[in-house]
Length: 315
Image (cartoon, rainbow, N blue to C red; front, side, top):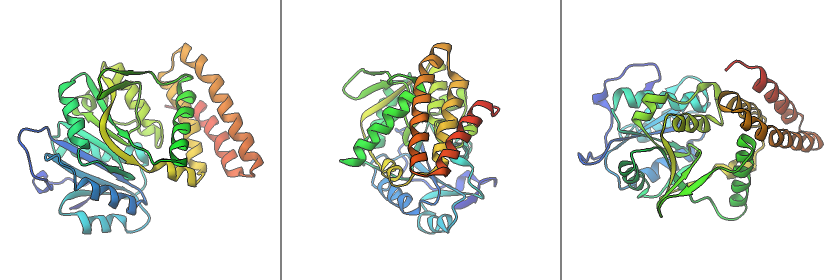
């Protein structure tokens, strides 16, 4: 079934997998934007999972081609396809799917999955099992078994730079069992979020549009008393870093530069700012010099605009 994002639907028409009364219900929300091939691979991997009580929602976020129609033709009997008329950004695009799930599907958990993720057959079983036995955990991430070689090195480097750029220090980690790693924040490429948490702290902040909205949600969750963790035995494979490595998008640099400042303005203490400023300035200076020498004026302008908007835009 394909629906417009603003149209009311009868929840009795939603597709269901085989329902298990003994397992919590999970609504899986996937955002697609001009990524049909990746989305198909993701959905095909989901069809093989061993968890029984789940439903899938695919939000097409204003793709330029026929993505929504093709997804409806291929998966319409198994998943709900929601078509946004324009690109609402990653944050609000996901919110469209989350709102639909909370209103029509009555899930215990919402699973947010990037469309370029391949999941292990047991990934959701492992997430739900840990979440059910650790009620203080509000956001639980899978472990990304990132591609080997160059992409793995790039992934680790970007994660490290992002961690320093946002906070000025490494993310705090504490392993409390062989299956659970507590951490300050996680990427939303594969996260299980407790429904109660969403009702208490709200959905993604649409102001971020793209990038850092996951950090903001984790920060609000921890402030409300929830823990954020990684389920080390829930495995997924995320292709995103390879895509980042292949293309340098001025828009990506704009949002990253701007949103780091949004994060600090929204959540940063005086000590956080003192830690953040040196790393942010160093990070930004290196990129400005590098892309100036590479004659990528589009990225240089995006970095400068991101700095300006991050300081002066209203949150």
